[in-house]
Image (cartoon, rainbow, N blue to C red; front, top):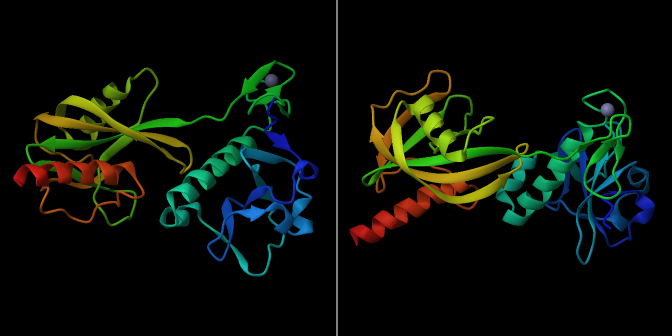
Length: 269
Ligand SMILES: [Zn+2]
């Protein structure tokens, strides 16, 4: 049986470690994976190590206390900076961050307030007093590219200063299907009605714990009215006159856009 909660004595020196401190990942010359043997002794006395994956080597995530000194040539950096590293880096470090974030937020039972204990049989913490288990949770979101002929609806989010235009997106609310969310979010954020909703693909998005479900939907009716406070601008863009959009390498939004552009290009010959 796989125990997800380890201590440093259970690691071999070749096992891999991801280090976080105060919500930032410790990176050394672009390298975010440490071997257990290379982690300085004063850091390795950490309490609980959380298992991220197994294979030829175990990979664990370790949370360092704020006052721990990290090695001289290492620096704490944001998880987002790994977006430009590799898919695997983002997936691995993202998963580590989600597990760590969940664990730190579930030290006490949300029902009775007792301290929780790790469950040795699964990735969960347990309240012995009221016999509840708490598992890491993910938050499902939809991300949707609305199509009208050879044009697509792209919008700029009012809260993020990313500089690019992208698909519409939003969290799935309690009681909704993903398709219900597509209808509601597109209506709320752009004022448009859509139909022919079709699933494209999904992506784990660890900022902090979303599962993005990508969809296409066809325009049905209405005029664009950007939602105040949420959408700064929204417009139709032809596939051959695109503004700056997210890269397909890092996000399902980029893939939705790029995939549509390719379809239109091959149609146009
Ligand atoms: Zn409890």
